[in-house]
Image 1: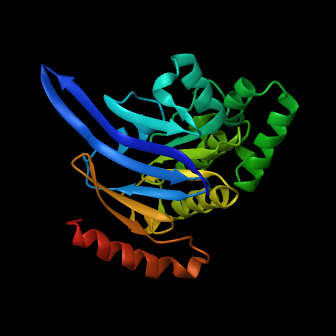
Image 2: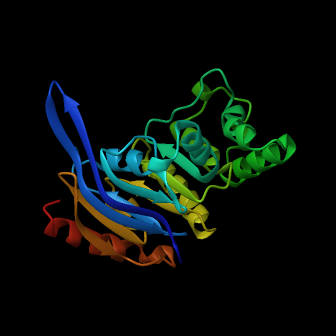
Image 3: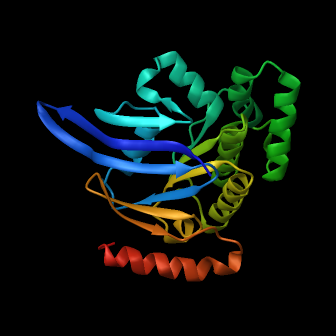
Length: 252
């Protein structure tokens, strides 16, 4: 598999009241097509900043981010917006939805922005909602559905344009265990269908389902654990134990 994301010597520094805060320091990583990579680390280690920077939502202070052969620093704002719309999907712990739109309309919006064939977009949206078990919420306002249903709607929205990669920031962090399992099952299904995933999580159970785990500490990648592709759910406990041991060795 070829690399879809390549990051070289990435640094991110914020200036606050004339003081420099180095959030990311010389990050080097890659994600291959169809790969599932989790990023773990203590709070404040720079995980979310890393996700936002490599996805083009934020700009690096220095270094290089290449996505699908394009250097993000060479793209203007409009080109970055179009790239994120058509080639990337996003899921966040805080489930950002437009309050004046129904659940279905929130899912349709990025699809309509990227594709002029509205019938095809509607059919894909309804197909995704059926697959994730939320088609009955289509006409509901976002305040009328549960957190688990809303996060599954966010996953539908992230998948509507068939992205090459999904960036997920704590996608199960605000969910109960059953809803978290539902979201992870569908995220894994999307990954098995060929969509790469780069996910930030604090959950050992969730990260244990990924192919590879990166450990971030003080803005620097301090380790990598290759778990390989999970082929059966019965492997979950063994993978989680292996991950826990590895994390404890790093002071988790």
